[in-house]
Length: 520
Image (cartoon, rainbow, N blue to C red; front, side):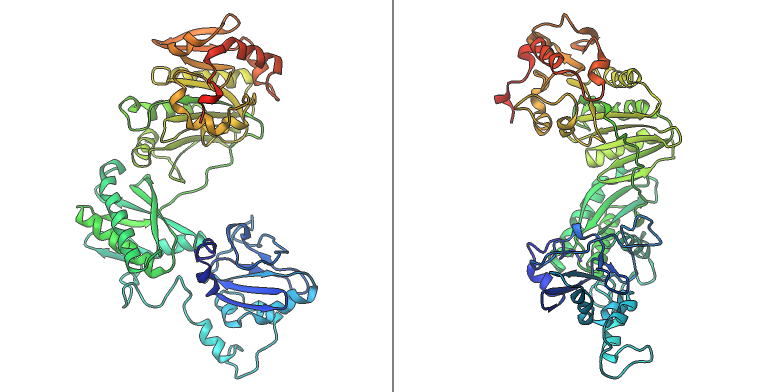
């Protein structure tokens, strides 16, 4: 199923899918995507076309979302046996309709789309009691690629009972396959939850060895068939993302080897699908007052208390708590949010905590990357700009003893990385981009990338500044000084400060502004 996404590099694999051409139209059947249609001349409605790299050079028409009663957004349709049909056509109402006649009725039946057979001419030949040609009926009853009849390594699957117990490591294959199907067979996250209740920090080394061994064994048996990555802490243990799947056999091999490895490492527990979710839609459509704070890398000695401070700051928004890391988010109702955030940082070297109160339309997010660059964002529909500035100031002062630079800038949408400064206000000066603000972290303890309404500076910064007579200067901690513009409202207003104000600020900071030629 992953072959379509990688068809630029594996075009031979893609060509192995059923493909037939009628004039200028082409039909491709593959175990990855899905179509739906209305009877008549309506074009095919193709599911998630942007995620695939389809073969051929035909012009695509009629793209739309697929209606799905189980998903009101119509983004994904999840039949038990997934097939897909993509159609290209240069025009002409007849060709779209005629294209159906070349699709294997057995393949449509196996994919749960027997209704499309009505659009095609009935094949000539003996029919089964179900009305399907005998040859096609046999095809329809064959297991699809991801659910082969045979188990791993030849014989019957050791997981055919749903939950396998291999010397204390229980594998819930049924739950993992259900989650894989719910994800459109793109991949699945599995977690190892230890019986002893040990946290992620205690077991991560053994789990990491298990992932490495499972990747090696599964791909030795079938090259490029499966890959585990994006290891992170979950609320119950450690979670890993399994992708690039070519077959259920490859998945079972991976799970079996992983289970054996953690058992050898002295662990027992359950290997199951990870229970995770999408973060609620909390971001404001307007720029949010965002504090960017440069800290030491997660896991270093100076960061031992950071999760507690971050959770304390975010929790002021109220509502539900979410911990995110490695592309995975979980609702945390345990009361141990800081502990779980610390575990995520230990395992994945990055993480985030979000508190969101949907009823009050209020949220606060803190996110930190592996380089120690953190972002603090708040959204409160009822708060003033002054209140938002107070929250940003509180974040900076809480980290003043640990940070070597910080600044505040109104930023549209969620800031995942410091690259987001490139779309914040005011616009960066010539020669400085959002990406350069992120990748030149080693410069920011001595220089500043540009002027901002609020900045935490070191003594080395201050030695380069030309004139702070027009700024509010506050001693924060030894060696750290908070410098603020006298009129924060002017800097935080929609559209940002007037160009004359920015020009004067740049003149005030003088040699503290990083030379453009020193920026990578």
